[in-house]
Image 1 (tube, helix red, strand yellow):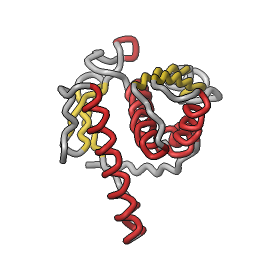
Image 2 (image 1 turned 180 degrees about the vertical axis):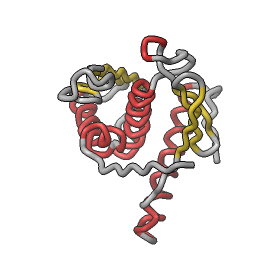
Image 3 (image 1 turned 45 degrees about the horizontal axis):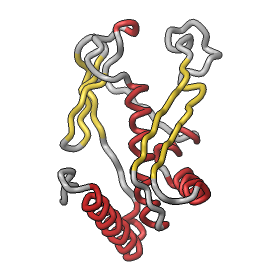
Length: 183
């Protein structure tokens, strides 16, 4: 695996990023063309409770903690689950913007994404079950710098909206099955 060398000059970094995006795109295309089942991925992430309400999350070789602020019974040692969800949305947007900018030949120098989301905690605390438990509204503000016209960046936005997996999770219902077992 090649690590993106961020010590390079901005133009070298951009060239290295473009090469890595092109290689990744063509590798996946070839793999899927050879066998469509190669497109099917299964992710497994594990969480173990610790502290007051925190979780230690293991995703492959990566380990991180998710917690809640004190007002929600946490120790505030890490971002909350909803903040992590918004972070996942932002990071997926950045990835897909980079991938499709490369694919469409649209120059993107910098991307900055802000996610604002509204959550009504009445359902969480059992006060009002008619209120949605999750976000009632999510607003993404994406700032892009580069030499392209606004129309080209809007074309990129439209393409990203169609292909971003985490945006799809936020935008559409996903079947979820839950099994509880006694260990």
